[in-house]
Image 1 (tube, one colour):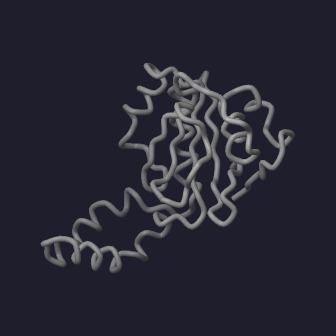
Image 2 (tube, one colour):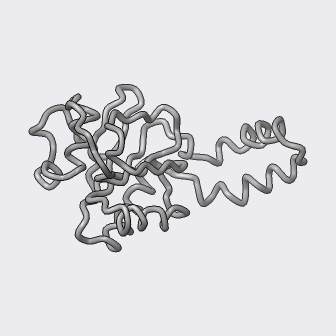
Length: 178
């Protein structure tokens, strides 16, 4: 995975400097003073993981969370944020140490955890995992991000779509190079 650190203004690529992606980087990584927003400027898709906490001002962004940042079931919400919400950019953010990576290895832990909180049988819990795991499992954190980015770029060719990685160990955003 080829990642680019974003530690100063000069690290922000020119295509993002004058749009909400650059603002996101400034707010989160560079500690920029928060401006007031009347409506969202950007749609941020990110993983549901509780460790991914972005430093952004109120009303700056629509934020969609989904395991591994797999937004396939949120297509209408993405389109709404663009068509009605008027966002000017999309940022797709994965993170290190994502639970959706190699999900198959977590099958038994999932089944046991499911069983402790439900009235289903072992077979029903296993069937549930088996039905959903393949569509949600990632080989690498970046896999789904590039697929989603390409899809949204084809839908909205005039919007910048940034692919980023949040490193859990330092809470910083990095650009992922395709």
